Amino acid sequence: METQKFDLVVLGVGMAAVTAANKCASAGWSVAVVDELPYGGTCALRGCDPKKMLRRGAEIFDAASLMKGKGIEPGSLAINWSDLMAFKRTFTEKMPPKIESGLDVNGVTTLHGSAKFIGKNKIEISGNTLLEAKKVLIATGAKPRKIDLPGAQYLIDSTEFLELESLPKKILFVGGGFISFEFAHIAARAGSDIQIIDRGERALKGFDPDLVDKLLERSKEAGIEVVQKTSLVSIAQEGSGYSATLDVDGNTQKYSVDLIVHGAGRVPAIDYLDLDKAGVDSSAHGVKVNEFLQSISNPSIYAAGDAADTKGAPLTPVAVFEGKVAASNMLKGNHAKPDYKGVPTVVFTIPELARVGMLEEEAKAAGYKLRIATNDTSGWYSNLRVGETCAATKVIIDDETDKILGAHLLGPEYAEIINFFSLAMRLDLTTSDLKKMVSAYPSVGSDIGSML
Image (tube, helix red, strand yellow):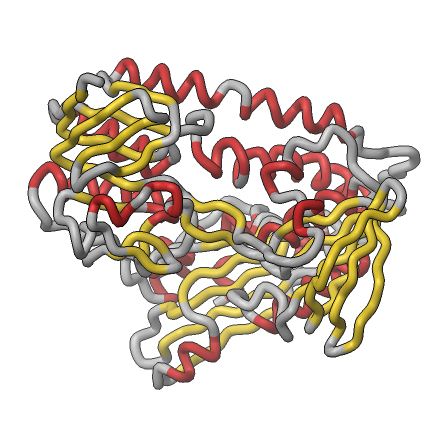
């Protein structure tokens, strides 16, 4: 086989990969990208975007329910799952060709197949193509964590859930994180009976526990049962469904369901790359990199996004700016470092739960003198208007500098409001600065000053 030579080969074609490939190609480098899956990565095709397309149906259903007796009669309003899934595909089916054509226009060579290293800077694709690169960016993303138990083959993962043509009546979600809660809130509004099991004592442990408690109450009202200190032991077929054996705080229970969904975490998708052939060190969190996103063991290799072991959260915006940083360092030599300050994260339940910065317990442990602004916003006009009774905020402020250390929001449209707190943190604005903002009224944004 003839070896094709490039300045840069990017493994994976998600957001970190596309960002870096286009940046380096625009600088005149010869660049190739390769992925065995359709171009677009998890967010565009198997995660954030299609999930939120499905959530729109749940939003409409829930909004009508909240306004019952307030001028709206929901009546026979229901979610048609197959039509909602078709709506989702109006986005996802267009993305791979759109992304590939965009790369082509920018002069990036687009390749398809399974890549693995056969040397420090040499890559084989599906046994029939050889590449050699001056630099390689590993941006292969993440995949569901393997669950090793009897009957694990009966689990479906988030990718498969997003392709369900019909929604079963009784669904069990395994794991108390983003995936389980977001899908559960969609499926419950579509008419399914939902149970989430979580082996820990606290679900959504990356979020403020006081707000999580409120969300759990709201989830229960929506028909979602959350059972903590519970783990899945085994799965067996039972008629057309399944029997799940659960360990509930040390006691064994059986649970009959139609579908079991794996929402118990994700891991870097790097195990098939044969990293040892390239002398690339890795951990359970991804490729080990220095502060410039360069492999600590092979200087010609960089990594970004969920495939890299960094301080960044596994979020699309983080992958994008890590892709930019990695590209800049490859082009100009190591000089840029990713800035993780003030990066917000949201679990898109109904209503959504948002966080940026420190938790209260983290800020206390760090020794700050705190001023904590807490509000039950369920009675505020912006929530009263839509009938939502589950809404609250907690803003953690450094009392000595008046700067925001963390913000935690639960309520309708608060995924948009968290961005204001993020910007304030990234620009070192004080709460006094934020209060100077003159907002359109009546808008949810006009509540920010009162949240402080």
